[in-house]
Image 1 (cartoon, rainbow over the protein chains, first blue to last red):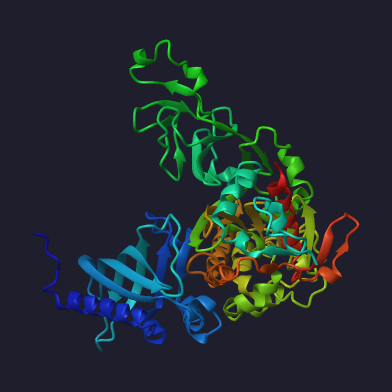
Image 2 (image 1 turned 180 degrees about the vertical axis):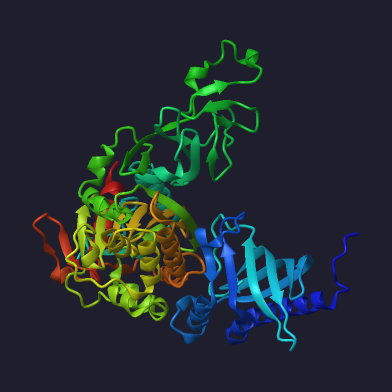
Length: 164
Length: 426
């Protein structure tokens, strides 16, 4: 059997942060969510399923700290009709595997299923996630990279008013 | 005002007046069925940009109305649009979004077709001896013509030439493609999403300046002051919409960018692009060339809406694909220069991502409004939808274009006049 790394306490710390992030996004607690990223952290939802060169590609989301701040403002300020009428979501993240471990970070891969409900319709979104979590001595763990690879990224994606 | 004669069954032209249309144009499945026949299978429908099928063998799949097609570039470099339907038992012969191939082989009984649709091979052909001749069973080929790299197709072999159909829209296409600064244009990527609403709601939106500051308030609040100022056209008398005929119209938001070849030198380059100016200066680009790149960054300053399914919208292509009476797929295709500085293309991608796509700061709010139109228009479907804004201040330009302010509904009236004409034809 493959070693999932779950006996490594740092892997458990990383998984804990991924789940905390999921809870914040379902609760639409975007102010807390924004604080979970490093200052140079990147949050990306690519279209091209194979690329890692996000800067040269068209993405659905490609946020640095500035764009995350603007995105959180948009979600909360009440000007955006789609954010005001956002679907309710529940998401489940599991199937964790450790992609990389360094002295200061863990990179996890996982599977995410989001169920979103709005106006009597459910929408299911499936994605492979990659999170790079960086640790500091104070226990203030942060997300340095989050990649959401939607399994339908090359076709019509109709998420509305929430984040993945 | 024109009244709507909704008592006359099957006389669809009567559902559209000059300035108002019946709400059931969005909700009646029978009207949708007839629209496919009388509009999407009768007139020119946009299917591709030439950069999407760059080489012999390149192909792309899409739809014309509800019918699946393959757009190919064959060995001679010609564009072909082929019905994606095997002549034997009807399976699609291509299941990829795009790619490169020598031809197409049906997965069911392996009938194989060339890039121009010719039937090349039938396995175990003895069963067809004296029954069929291969030359009589090519993939159905639609008529395909292009202008400035934009490829349209039609099922109607008797349709007028594409350039006649485009008419005065051609001038605006020439202006649109000046944003590539003399280089070929290429599609850089595509955002696709669907909304639960009728296709004409999107068709109307492209020249709807009126909704912009309301629906897109959150986007306006998130951009730099110069960009927000560029899109503050509500009180700008130079911001106008022209009807161009055949259902086409153009909405001008930023008059200073309508013809990018004209530069009076007064426009300040946006400070947000300074890092690019520095980088390109370092790379040895001339100040004139750099200024041109920066002025073209947001595109052409107008939305050109061609009937029925593609807009050349400021800096991107906006494509609508009708799925059903109450569902429409939208493609927002980012474009850039083929051969220009990649840093400029990257900046264009970031600008596109900021507004467009399912997680952009603009598109989801449009989709929310459109979905609400579909739900609301189901209430009293014979109550008219108003497209009469600005009727009292419309005038004719010397080119002969009915024109009013960009916040007016001149473009929608043009589209519905074409809808009425096509739906009234036998």
